[in-house]
Image 1 (cartoon, rainbow, N blue to C red):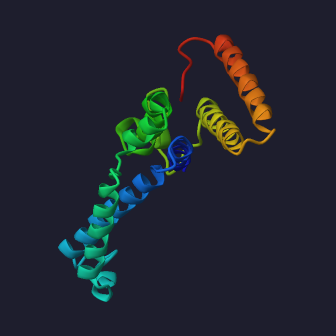
Image 2: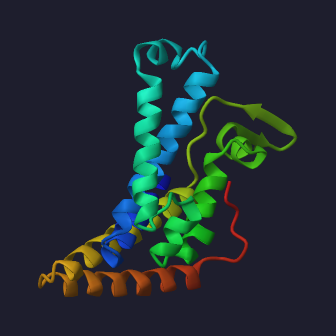
Length: 193
C-alpha cells in the first residue's frame, strides 16, 4: 500500500511540474489496458478473466486503446515505466532508496519471506503465518509516509498559491531536523529483525 502512495506522490509531483503529464498517465493506462486485453485474448480459460473476455468486444476495445495511444503519441506523450515517472517528478533519489526498499520488501524474495514469516530462537527456526513488523520497520514506514504527506501538502499549497505552503515548508524543516537527530542517536548496525 505504501508503494502505491509513493507512486501517486511521484505522479502528483510530475503533474504539478508539467500540466501535460496527465497525458503520459493516460498513455500508460491505455498501454497497460491493451496488455491486459491481449492477455485476455491469449488465455481465454484464465480463471480470473476468461468469462469477462467472452462478454466484451475485444476487437473494439483494442482498437480504442490503440487509437488513444496514437493520439497521445502525437502529442509526444508516451507510456512511462515506473522509474521514468519518478524521474519526471525529480524524485530519482526516492525511487532509488525508499521505493526500491518498498519493492524489495513487497516482492516475495527470500529476505522478505524470512522477515515476514521466520522466527529464530537460537538454532530453532519457526515458520509463522504472520510475523509483526519490527520497531525499525514501523519507524521506516511512518517516516516515509510523514515525509510524503508533508511534501504533498507543501507542493499542492505552493501550486495553488495559498498562504499555507509556508506552514508545510516549516513542518518539512522540522521533520528533517528530527530525522537528523534520530539518525545521529541511532546505534550503528542496528538489527532490523
